[in-house]
Image (cartoon, helix red, strand yellow):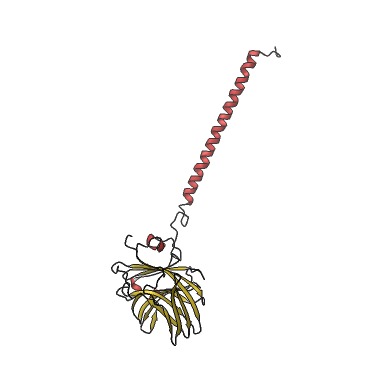
Length: 281
């Protein structure tokens, strides 16, 4: 009897073994799913804890030194210039000074050609020269305006300053926003024989591209101004930093400054754009 195997029992035992195996597999699968869910839950709780730690990535990023990452009012001004009032592409002079001059301070040639406004200066002594659009006003004196220009040093010293002049009241009273290819950026105000630096704006690391085209922009409101290089905010002037009744008065244009006798520079300007950021196109 010990060696007897009932065929019927053998036929039944095979399905039972299969059922037992299936049950074991099913149980293992359930355990695996539970373990996966526990891992996911643990990871989620860990992430919640980590991203709420002081100084973690969930916190607002601090403003970068160049002004990027700030609020919309300080975004790249070229991305939202507002109402375009006038664009000078320098296909024609359109009121810009051209020709040459030669005096004890410098020999200067200004030319509009090939879509560029090119200045060539040979300095006999430290020299600051401007070209103002006296016959064009922004027409938005109650709200403010924006000016941008493309500028490139063709040749000259790394500290040759170039940029935008504004708030021009007379030959002895005007403001300038200038940069050089070493990364220097300054806001300078002329009052008679004296130069001042409102708000102490003398930046040493502006994002200037040496030898390349640099986009300089100013945004002027009645008593404040913001200054950009290649879309990055480099300085902002508050009302408390100066004694002006308004910064909107006067004319605007371009300027170059060479700091030493014997220096020479050639600088090109293009795409001088005047707009009203607070007004819809």
